[in-house]
Length: 383
Image 1: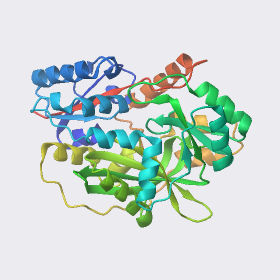
Image 2 (image 1 turned 180 degrees about the vertical axis):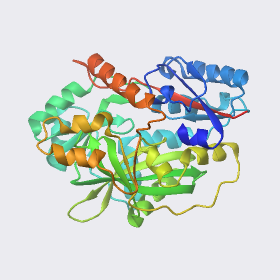
Image 3 (image 1 turned 90 degrees about the horizontal axis):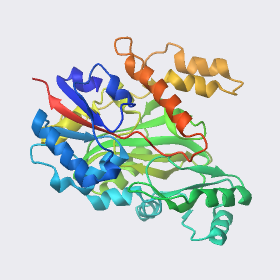
Image 4 (image 1 turned 120 degrees about the vertical axis):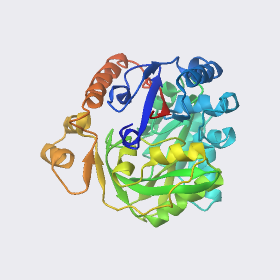
């Protein structure tokens, strides 16, 4: 939001709840409530069309899996004046399927963990013996780390398998769990913006810290120049003939240095602030791509730029850790080429994140963790 405002654009934000950080940023113009897209994708897009006609919106930027699902499925219903850079439905479906995307990676000569989709407990146990322990169980259809569980033996696998199968919706399918080999290595990503199967901008990053600690949302992330990783990620994106923003998540195996594809997120990534800090203004690139405007030539970026999310993740990371001083240093110690989402001129988003996390923790006590905040961002030219 802030980078768009600096570029002379006034971003409006629309979503079903006001918990999201972007709602509270000073960079935002209007704040608009929408129904949840899961209640009806066609109705959701129609409401977007009405608002676009009323406010003169020109570009639609969906940032959440549910808004992406609605826009991809009903893209032909979007009015001509409202541009959006999103993939074809076939590519979107393939990117979310944990089994098919690993099969695609192997066909391209890219390493991927061994993965099985067991139909019953006996097959789940057989899959666990085949991939070895510890291993991972995750929903077959989904995005990111949602629903990912690490298990260390057959007892834990059976327990997770039994508790896992609680339902499905348009984005996540917990009724078909995948048992997957766990790769011992560091999480690294390729983040890119594509135009009809070809990259217009891309970079690699490594996650120095995540929450939860064994893999999840990046809390400290750093730009890298990993050419082997970049080539692997771009190969997958090209094979999908992607259009729009996309991230491929890898684990770089400690013993061999080989990158293994873990997930594909067919939308903007959570560490978007890092790319902007490194001089790659992906939100502005998206604006130009959606409108068919000329994009600047692919530019280089510095390796070693860091971005931190200290609030509330420094505190969460310190809970129960004997290395609290080390954690405090990582999150708060001044360092060159290091940035964070804390802004003295725009503090409300961080405060909103505190309230949101407390609210989510309260609501999820005794319940299975599922995403509850869904946002779509609509951009409007500054008048």
